Image 1 (cartoon, rainbow, N blue to C red):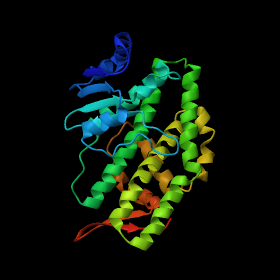
Image 2: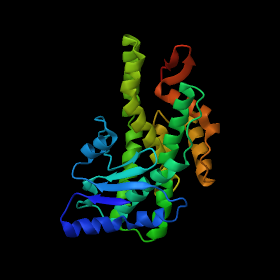
Image 3: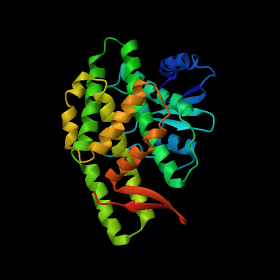
Image 4: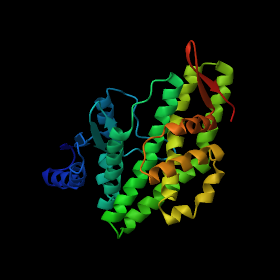
Length: 294
């Protein structure tokens, strides 16, 4: 595993590189070895993520005052982990960074566990991939929390504040229903222009942010007592209903059993997507999306 630290002086670079030893320690326990090709702390986080993936669309700003600070980039037979230089600034400590390292490491580990989609149809594969993408987020959070508890039985105040601040941010982003209103607005615009491809393009990033925030909120609720005590608040989100809770219960059950066979949950994902105004089906001409009112 190559470690590239582009920020700081030589002494600071060595200190940062030493923090990644925990990743190497965990990797050495896997048989066959897990292939993380590189860990990078670049000068320019956004530019580096885009360059590695040969894209220009990645943006660290997810809206609702939430910023992406790390990225696991999946290659054919390996992964690259990229961490924002912002996590080495004032206000961050080792425990906070370690929780982020572990979260991304879990994504890399899960990359090998997640099966390739069964090529049944375009719509089935879409449901299949969304099912695993969201479970990966839920699983990575819960597992990283468990490891942090073992490594750091005594948490720093700055870490506790970090965790509670994250939960508050994720929760607020859902209960203020801004994501929901954005989806409704795109549905209304679709009723005018009728362009399904345009609708899906505009809704993609809203869905990605909102759906992942739902996973984050429930992963906190399922691990931290302070978050559990506030669970009722999430019911103020228009995205939280029986369909969502059935999917979360499915993920909870799979996590507790450490299972990655999620095939039986495809129908749950189909129902969950209707919360965002989407239902997919296959036609002779290809995949079709029914745009539903919410």
